Image 1 (tube, helix red, strand yellow):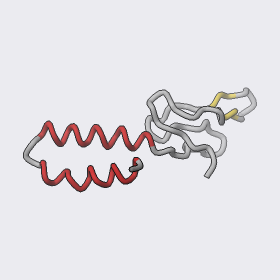
Image 2 (cartoon, rainbow, N blue to C red):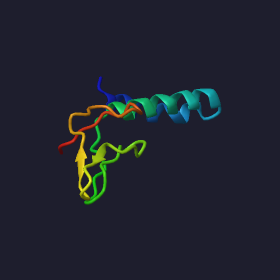
Image 3 (cartoon, one colour):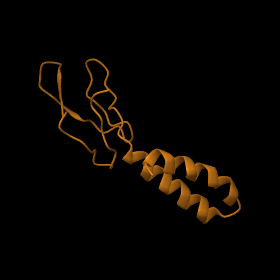
Image 4 (cartoon, rainbow, N blue to C red):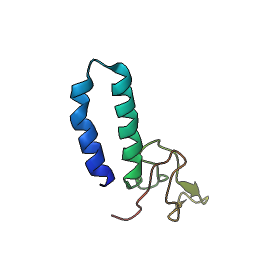
Length: 87
């Protein structure tokens, strides 16, 4: 089973446990963790640093002339989000 299928199954069982706040919290936490295991493309806008799609942490460094050097070798952000630099 992959992360996407597991997330879908967790979303499907959520309504069954609507009266159990602890169970809903546990399911939501599991969904958040699974979402970070699915590689996502960093947010990149021209003339700005690349940002993590989960926590908005900068994934670039300014090289002093208005340009940013993106950390293409970085595969995982500090927040745990897996990164996919190319589409």
